[in-house]
Length: 326
Ligand SMILES: [Zn+2]
Image 1 (cartoon, rainbow, N blue to C red):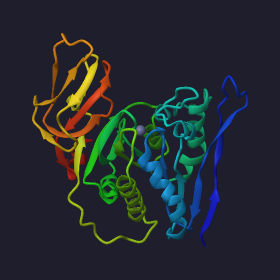
Image 2 (cartoon, helix red, strand yellow):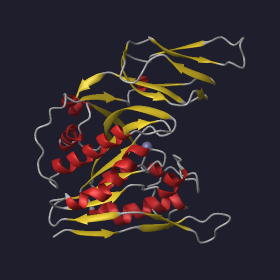
Image 3 (cartoon, helix red, strand yellow):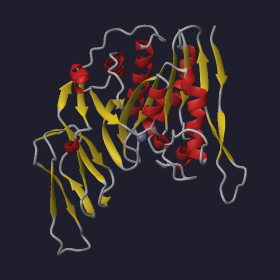
């Protein structure tokens, strides 16, 4: 017996012009009886569109498809940032992926995090939390596995990454206690993420790939019928935690890359230049790949400041090597 219900919640978000204002976070609960409970969410950063559009598709489609268990759909978990088209919450400048800091919540962003930690995380076994490059970055579409602190290797993670269906997976390590991976870890929730597209734009093919990946994850977790064995190519993993994976701007300028996402480069190969057209006497700065590997991320905004991430490069390793990287 399928039961579909709204479980929206609202969070205080006062401004100087609205004393008791609240923002509503939309949540759809689809209950198909016994089985795992899974949350599919996007919009932790409000300007990351592919997952938000894909989960909105599932809002319409999934009630007719779900076979077992319970799914919570959160297409815009930072609703205020999604409405504003910004990465951070416009209300208080908060980063929802750093706001799981425990009570008392100081303002809107920590309020959303506290509500998720009280209402959602204790009720689920697994989650897929879809991100993208947002306004400032463009990613090679990839699933993402994040190891929080000393989390033990879980062999279900590469299976989920394979099910997601993209040929690339990225591996991060994180130690920030306020992050979504930390909150999921505290509640024993299996968490896969993704980085899909970016820039201020989005495209239907990326949204569709994300939606299909989410459905395939539900199959892998036993909530949808098993899918025929994937004919997708073997998944490779890129370790983005290595110190040399990220090149940041050392200086202000206009970033002109000469490589593209997915291109393989050698260590020291020129990947672009930083120029200052308003100061024609300033020397052009040639930028070089910090290590050999595939270009998996590029800055999507040409004007750059010191500290901005310009490019991420990492060698492709077999997904089966993940356990040895823990
Ligand atoms: Zn994000």
